[in-house]
Length: 358
Ligand SMILES: C[S@@+](CC[C@H](N)C(=O)[O-])C[C@H]1O[C@@H](n2cnc3c(N)ncnc32)[C@H](O)[C@@H]1O
Image 1: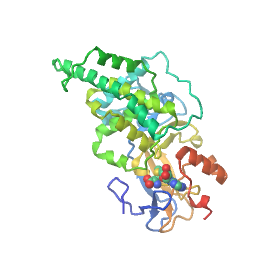
Image 2: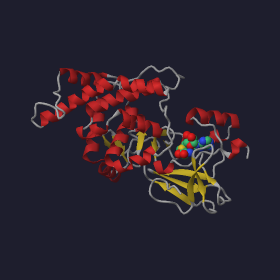
Image 3: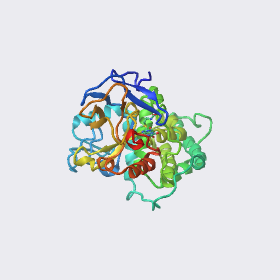
Image 4: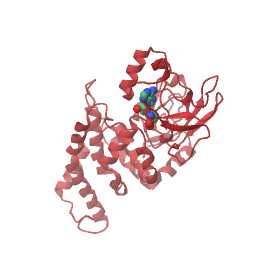
């Protein structure tokens, strides 16, 4: 049996491969209704949209009906419900994490207004070849910025040349300045910084992320792809030197390729989740497949997801434990509409029992 990649198995279920839907979770025994079968507290990367940063706690995602939270930490750009949340946030991030968010905040706030790119709706999804070409197009500038940053280290250490023997010249510093003048995408930056800090803090857990379902074309359109490559250059230019070895095109692409089909929306807990604060990836919760008639109800409790058997009758041994990727409203749509939406948003042809008419 494969465990949930957290080194712990469950008394309730196992993960098995299916013919049409990748891996899925199956009950290993009858489970009564309302039983808590899994709790996931392994948030790896999350985006708290900038528009919600004053109202939603950076630690527990608490929300007070749109009121500004008590503690606003303008240095790192997050607000918190109370000191306890702020302290937990600081403790997890450590000095390097706090320095990273401080650098990001300084850059974003330094702009007179948020950059807005005129975006054409319905542009096609970039294919693998286009994605590779776009990342390659920034490789030279990235290399120049790295040398410029290594020059900082050399200066700090009183040396003339950077560690790799290449002296930082005007050309290197110019490449860095040029990157800083490019359009900013604060939410993409938030996503990338979270992922980098997570990889830095928990290198041994990287494989858990790599084990998730892959989307080889994770960028919805060319604008989003370019926002990621620009953000790569921005981060090379501003993040603490200790992080630079993991600020690579490969790391950033891998984060997007695993997040794309595995992220959960972070929504308000009231009003049927009408407020969308952002999204995050909890690897241990990413093995539940979708069903248009799910057996499991998921519920966010702070930074944690809980999964309970949702049917009055419970589930029988061997039955699939599935959640829904649709909203309450979307679940009422007809089969054609649901199938089209799942294809558009998630890229799969729904093979659940309700759609297959089983
Ligand atoms: C969050 S992952 C679920 C676990 C995944 N099956 C795996 O092997 O890692 C989401 C992916 O699972 C597959 N999937 C989930 N529900 C499905 C369904 N009802 N029909 C077909 N494929 C499904 C799709 O490939 C989707 O992108």
